[in-house]
Length: 165
Image (cartoon, rainbow, N blue to C red; front, side, top):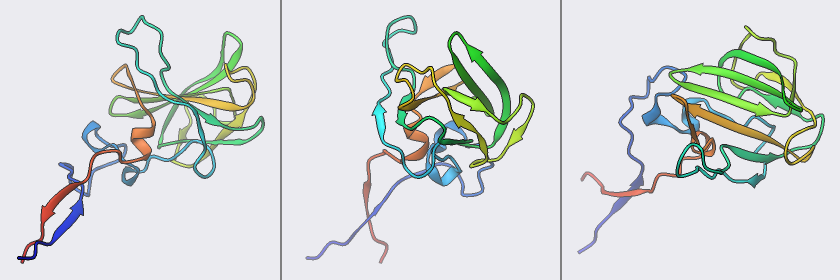
């Protein structure tokens, strides 16, 4: 007896899902992209704390050099472009509860600007906890930090389904 199987992933979201994506459809197929050119090296992974007040890493650090271009990871409205303590920060509200913060970014986009995914919004500055060697990319969904990599890479397990015959 021969059994054939197909490798696929399961999604409950129809292909016509409007941008930005709903929480159930977090993947690159929904228009999210890296905020740097190409696929940057992750030099500091996401580490969600057990409680909001505990230490953790509420985003990812992506390898970058001072002056590198920074791009909007998804379409949205720039809601903050200024300094926080000692570093320049850019915040984009993507709608549906998603907000991105990237630092250190010397913003070219201004507060109130609407940007498309992939639009050049600024350049890597200095002042991040990893100096000029990276940017910190944080994403909040309804106020809770989530791992931004989940918006780019589909990390769900593959599910084996029988082929229709």
